[in-house]
Length: 304
Image (cartoon, rainbow, N blue to C red; front, side):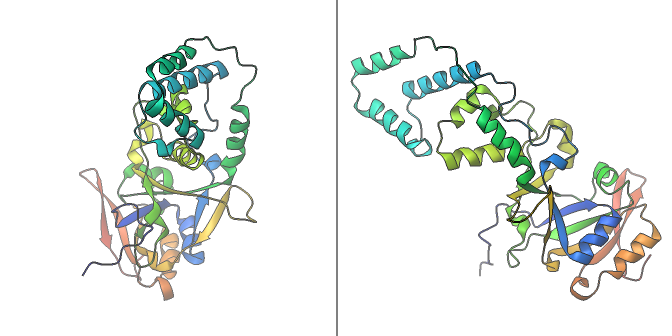
């Protein structure tokens, strides 16, 4: 018999991990909440670009749009359905019904030099993006609990903890929606003038989906060591500020790893929280090994 698969599931991961300080771990366990932050709070200044179409001038975008539309006239699109309705109708009529003579006349239009643009039509879009950034809510996760650099940077120099979060179909875990972050060596097309020209031809909902996915799930190669996955949403009505602490089902936590340098008091405090609906959580102690790896040993609730 096939087990239940949540319609929310986008991947095959069984668990994710969240690195945090001991102080944060106490708050998370006591309140059973995780913090979802706006990208304006991220430590990487290039993470989730702060401006749309940065460095692309109005003339460059205008020329790129002209060139891309010419491409669409010369070569039929593979899928008309993704294009704006009116553009799709024009292109389908052109490719399926226009005579060779009419096609030549239309293509001749593209040989006409473009007038200098009088303004920047992307200003409104850029302003919308700038205002949208604080509204975003992103939860960052990773797929391994033994990344040394992550322990150092995100678990307060090995004194914090790492939480293992189940990707449970039965619980419909929020992280079933997570997507992996990409670390491309070259700039994705959507960050170029041609990429923006293509984006402007798409139906609104498809263009927005591509825009958010490209800007949220791409980082520079310098951050590849994080092996990060993300979920994003928008702040809920009535929420203010640049982060939100959202409740989660405590059954989603399966293990807790204590840092190699965690203090006895912090460890004792955290272990004391593993009761009631958290009594199923298995605690482990992380250790530095001489072969340059971090190992984990399961411990009892009374260990410190």
